[in-house]
Length: 104
Image (tube, helix red, strand yellow):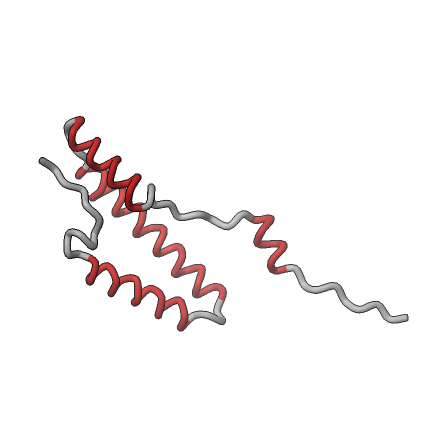
């Protein structure tokens, strides 16, 4: 029987937490550098894609019971992983300069 319990239940939470902390530290070290943060976000997106395509997809269950277990785990433990991209309009709104005070 295939089991798809959460990382914490499989004893893998410690190494995942180390990765999360390393990424958080890398982001904080670049906090004032928009371009460096963009590079970090691109690397995370590429890593996400690589894991999904080269490791996750080949590891998908080959039978209905395994698929049911996986879907149940996804439902119970937080849904499908997704990396959301900022929309260009959002970016423009956030980076807009404040209106200059008019000189009367």
